[in-house]
Amino acid sequence: MTDFKCAIFDLDGTVLDSADVWNQIDIEFFAQRGMAMPEDYGKIISPMGFQRAAEYTVATYGLSETPQEVVAVWNKMSREKFKNEVKLKPGAKEYLEHLKSRGVVLCIATASQEDMFIPALENNGIYHLFDYITTLNEVKRGKGFPDIYLKASQKAGFEVKDCVVFEDLLAGIKGAKDGGFYTVAMYDKNSKKDIEKIKNITDKLIYSFEELI
Image (cartoon, rainbow, N blue to C red):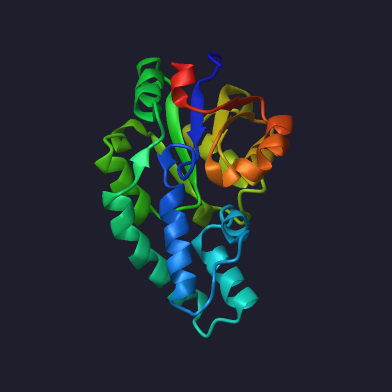
């Protein structure tokens, strides 16, 4: 856990403690349409990114809205919550600062939209620590595949062997492992059901960044 030059971080559930916010948004979204949120909905859409998730939601639940309209609703619902309510996972800021002091290049690889997560990072005083940002909008496939992590490492100018990926989702960890990355899984309650599968494939499992400082 010390021999790497580039650290690639997922945000939701890994750096940002945003599980409750996303659950609340999803519950409210379905309630506004007279439906209860399906139990596995969050797990299914988390690796997709907004556009793919909206397309899935419209098609699966027969919504009258277009995917673009659904994305606009999600953006409106989440923007203020992310700016004002989302906090960091324990030890996240301290660990990022520790890596920065060692000269490690810090990257973001996220399914979220920049106009949401940037205010959250700024509000928590860590936006300036990151060197590169990559979102799912820049690659063809979601987080069940290595594309976004490979793109992030290419942006930073490092080979896979010099990078470590921090993720909370089973799909994200699998995608990073398939790309040849060393992976650190961050425990998050949204991934609790997959914890045994995560343990079986990740290189390291942590429950707090404080374990690494």
